Length: 94
Image 1 (cartoon, rainbow, N blue to C red):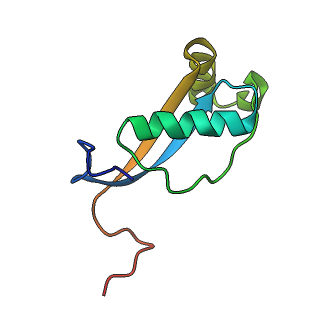
Image 2: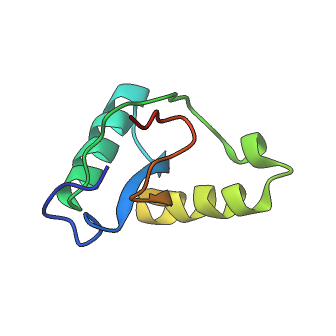
């Protein structure tokens, strides 16, 4: 979710972030991703999954393959899937 310092704080309720990070271990990739996301005024609340990937992982997924190749060049790529700052279907409103 955006921190109170983020420009997105009032308008964005949260995000799912897909990360491609070049690192020697999954743990180091997670640490690097968390630091990068937090440096951009976002809070990491949960990690759903982390695993090593290769170009073969994305054989039939062109967009993800592009992110993978860009991470090979830049070392990391983050794709934020944002949702608005309003109640979501899974949230109960009292």
